[in-house]
Amino acid sequence: MHKTIGKLAATDPAARAPDGTLDLPHRLRRNRRADWTRRLVRETTLTVDDLIWPIFLIDGEKRREPVPSMPGVERFSIDEAARAVTEAAALGVPAIALFPFTDPDLRDPDGSEALNDQNLVCRALRLLKREVPEIGLITDVALDPYTSHGHDGLLDGERILNDATVATLVRQALTQAEAGADVIAPSDMMDGRVGAIRSALDDAGKADVQIMSYAAKYASAFYGPFRDAIGTKKALVGDKKTYQMDPANGDEAEREAELDVAEGADMLMVKPGMPYLDVLRRLKDRFRMPTYAYQVSGEYAMITAAGQNGWLDHDAAMMESLVCFKRAGADGVLTYFAVEAARRLKQP
Ligand SMILES: NCc1[nH]cc(CCC(=O)O)c1CC(=O)O
Ligand SMILES: [Mg+2]
Figure 1 (tube, rainbow, N blue to C red):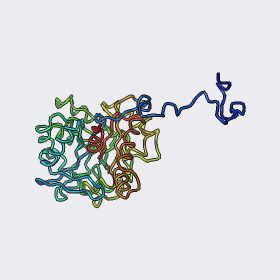
Figure 2: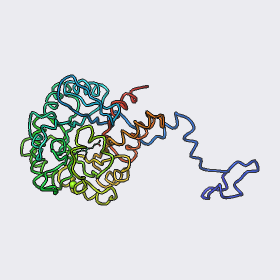
Figure 3: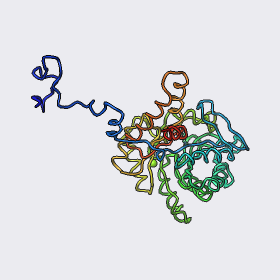
Figure 4: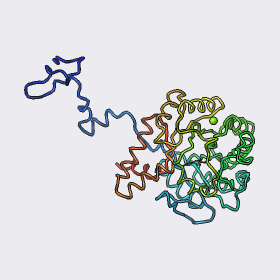
């Protein structure tokens, strides 16, 4: 019998046997002593079903163009995208998210290319729906790939116009749904856009199209490489702090999510990922919604660059980061590592 049950054994001198053995009733290391028991007590698992792969699109044919600040990530012309997405689907990745690099000549202050049903995203949607029907297609709703000033909304001088932007986003969402988007993902952070998009989709006979809301999207420095990838970094005038959230705020994330749930969001997202795991946990616990984390471009760049320098073990850091999203409450992760991670998960 342990003399010390209920006490802190190690601080009780009586608990120490003459040979120095601690008289411990609880030894948490017992469950960790071999691989089989570690597997048996594991609380969360990452599977390929948890992975959403964001990809970048460019115009042209047979083109794959590296993104310098995201080593290993390429922009695809849509024929190449079909090839890459076919491979992702074969690995079991359930969904992809599409982001266009728009020709600067097609960008204007109103982002009108967003409403063109022949734009890069719409053409990719139609091709991918035909060639890879088994994968889910998620599209980003926001104007930044299409505006000459790089903002997600319409500007009046330096002011982002909320309600006028929402009207345009609704039309962008309908254009994407018409072209074959399965999930509309508004990333713009305008107030009221989820409700407006939901009712417009329903009125258009698109009640089956889901909405994944970027409910808590922060004004983050970690989006830098993404803005390189879609070519908005040089264009962007000022910053996005009047619509994206202050990284210092957590309660406000709950209010953002609460409104999006009330407006009809099917899924919630927190973005960025790793520095915001507390926000993820709060939203999951409070709303019990399907909740996703976006491991953004800057997070990808950090892990990849440190791996390339030999400063950390790339694959181990990648897999650890992904399982930690699950532990923090994510139902899935948007990650540029999706295909690499899926390949690793396939290994015996
Ligand atoms: N609406 C734009 C958008 N959608 C996804 C990302 C960032 C994704 C990433 O960094 O990987 C951004 C960038 C931004 O808000 O400036
Ligand atoms: Mg909101």
